[in-house]
Length: 102
Image 1 (cartoon, rainbow, N blue to C red):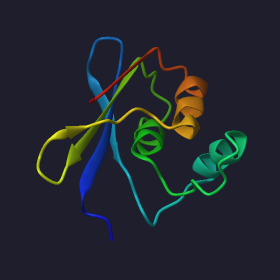
Image 2: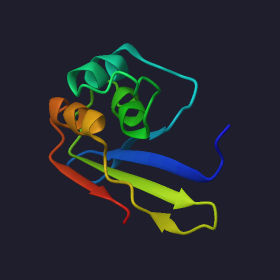
Image 3: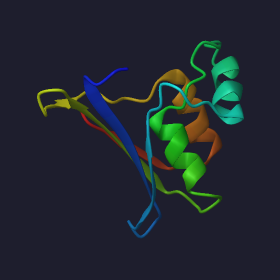
Image 4: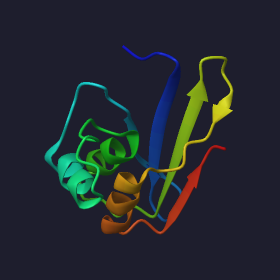
């Protein structure tokens, strides 16, 4: 089990209201995660990423922006740029703005 860092994604509507949150999973998968993993030519990335979890939990609501946060084991912000798989999913969901910790 990995505990060195926490990754969370937050989806917001156009008014800035929180719609959903998602976390990385090292044991859960989803057909859309597998689909975008294959599309990105990274079929090994089948476990649910925080971005995908948050997008799915929005349950069809219009997502304007997504913010991804990675916290290191010392409590410091870490780089949380979306991977190629999540970039494809975010684009497919029509998200207009992406921000993340650096």
